[in-house]
Structures are given as C-alpha cells and as structure tokens.
Length: 81
Image 1 (tube, rainbow, N blue to C red):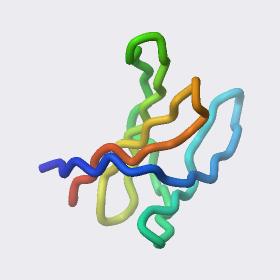
Image 2 (cartoon, helix red, strand yellow; image 1 turned 60 degrees about the horizontal axis):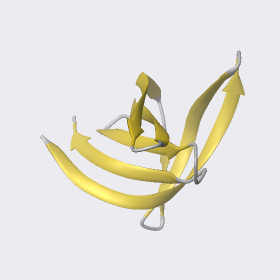
Image 3 (cartoon, one colour; image 1 turned 90 degrees about the horizontal axis):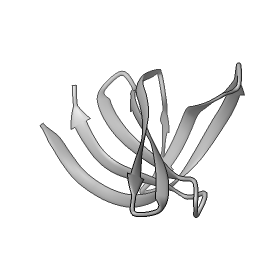
Image 4 (cartoon, helix red, strand yellow; image 1 turned 180 degrees about the vertical axis):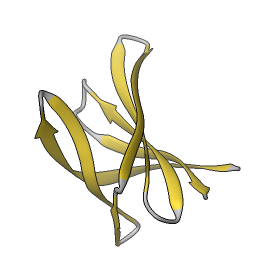
C-alpha cells in the first residue's frame, strides 16, 4: 500500500543515452540509493509538465516527480516492498 508523502527532495541524477536517471535522493535527512527505475512517464498538471519516476531500492518503492517548470523534485509516494 502506498503512503502519500508530498515532500520536496534533493536528487542526484545521471544522464545516460539522452535520458535522465535518478541515482540517489535525500529525504528527511537520509540518503536513498535508487537500485532500479521501474517506470518513467510524464503528465500535465495545468500548463506544467511533470516527469514521474517510479523507482525502488532493496526495501521500498518510491514515486518521484520532477517539475520541468520549477526544476524541483518531490517525493510523492512510498510503499514498502
């Protein structure tokens, strides 16, 4: 079951083959290593385009949102695997 988080985070990304790939993110003073990018898609929120990354580490799954307008990241949801 997913838990809503909706908090701003810092994300370290890599650019591979013309694509952005989240590697690590900092949330609530802790660093989380992304082990797998499960899904990437974009959606419109009004005029803003948001790129959604569904990622996981060894214990949890996360939904990270990148705003192309503000260039900010948000942890939207988390689920225990």
